[in-house]
Length: 74
Image (tube, rainbow, N blue to C red):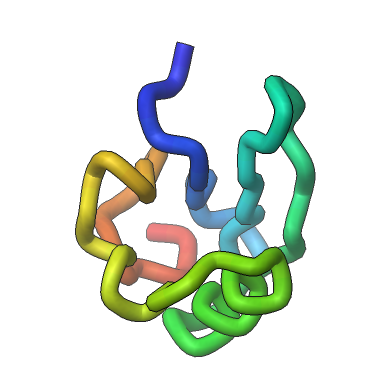
């Protein structure tokens, strides 16, 4: 079980990372982010306040399968 409500999944082979948010016990896909800017836009559209400020807060965002702020497959 994940502890953070927002998950940035591992980078895809073509680049970008899927972003999901857990709301009401269900994971919702917000989109495929290719940058921090994309991620912030997705989160703001989903109603997250101060989205840019929470990117490095592990209580809010879990970065899976790659380092935080890494957008291309290794």
